[in-house]
Amino acid sequence: MAHILLRGILLASMMIAVAAMAGDVPGGKKELAPTGSLRVGVVAAPKANVFFVAIDADGKPRGVTVDLGDELARTLDVASEFLVAHNSGELTDALERGLIDVAFLPVDEERKKRVAFGPVYVQFESTCLVLGSSGFKTVSDLDRQGVRVAVEANTTTGRAAAGVLKLATVVAVPSVGEAIEMLRRGSVDAFALGREALVPYQADIQGSRILDGYFHRTGIAIAVPKSGQGALALVSTFLNEAKASGLIRRTFDKADLRSTAVAPAD
Image (cartoon, rainbow, N blue to C red; front, side, top):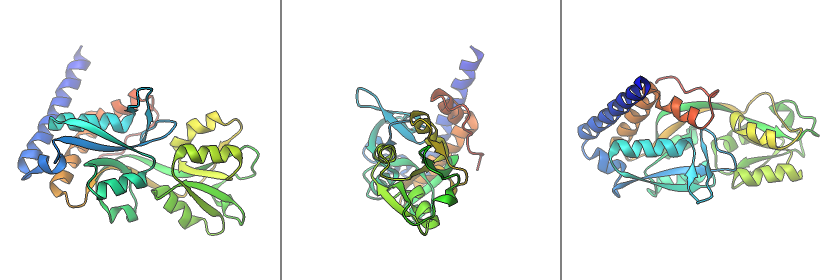
């Protein structure tokens, strides 16, 4: 009972903090949710994790970023709507064009030119999944002529892989599902993604393994259009409060991601 009461107090405190910020920033709430509802971008994949969502039988997205989007909408006292994309590149395009109001995106220098980032809520490193029949042990082993590495198109991991692999061929595909099927068929030698995101696919493909080493390390952060300084202030307050109150931790635990660490406070 005391735990439930404490959770309620923490949530109320977060709502008050965001509401106060909305009042302090001229037009802040209107800037963040100009249509009267909060349009949140998420990315679907066969397996959900701290970034990807799964699609339920009724067609609704489910996962960490959905829960965080719903919570942000509640603090603003507006409804949430979700745009489901195939990859983070599509979300970046949608955010830049004003088709969505907020998203949670991996951070890299190219993406910083196009959207405004608030705080990071989780950190990750990108590596590769390979079949058990391959001789690859580390990421650096992949950089050979004739090796084909699948990446999601227009993504942070895709750009990092292309920057590291000088001899191998980087094959851009639209979605995680397509990349996994290409790996199963042997159409590519490896698939690049976040290490933790690859774990459930490794379990599905007998004998497959995740390579040692990584292409890069970065974080996943809350993001808004570049022109929205009031919106950026609001979502930054929300995310920092969500980390401090334990909301991010509870959201990870609800998704059975208990071993995933929440990014430290900014």
